[in-house]
Image 1 (tube, rainbow, N blue to C red):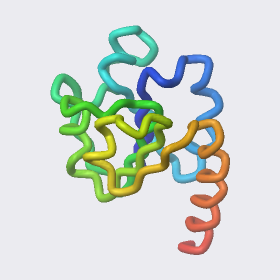
Image 2: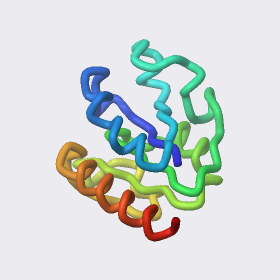
Image 3: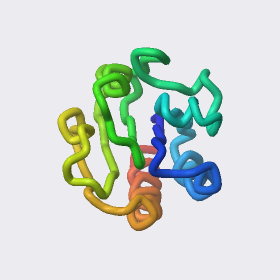
Length: 121
């Protein structure tokens, strides 16, 4: 699993994502805007000017999902997006979309993923 963050989060928010990252042993990734700001290293950048990834599950949080980023996740098994903006471009690329503030969704999503992973074991 890969969790991609956009500029809808700040570096101060990243610690709040750690429980989500810990459940399946996910990796944190970022959009170009995030790496341009120096909030994440370029090695974590996904998209045309970054890397392409193919996880079973990609969760995009607080990112607009413009084409340059979406190209980097098109090989993902499932793309789940969390964004409060109903007009964000990410909805064109997401298999599952949650229109909400990420702080409201991530704790519930983390708990649900933990239950699912325990069932699979």
